[in-house]
Length: 72
Image 1 (cartoon, rainbow, N blue to C red):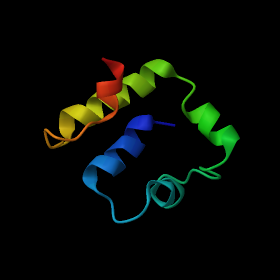
Image 2: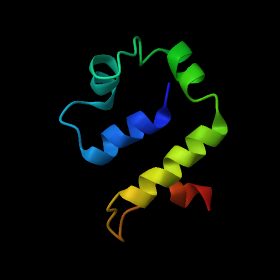
Image 3: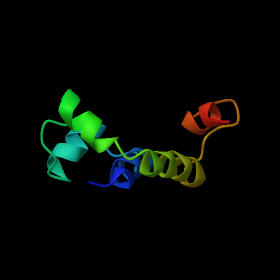
Image 4: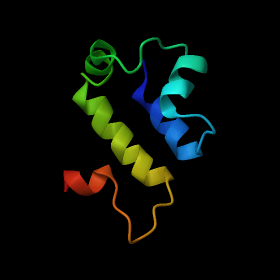
């Protein structure tokens, strides 16, 4: 599973909810379950990379915050 796929969905402003995108487009199942979430986000390095990548490719207004602001 690639966290960058989910981040890409968010960055692209997909029409569906992220959970629908994961279920339909990425064929992940039970994406809202505790087990799925723990497994999906267990690799901290991948999570940090995805958060930083989101910041890099997004157009975040200066007055808004994102997850990278919490990492500082």
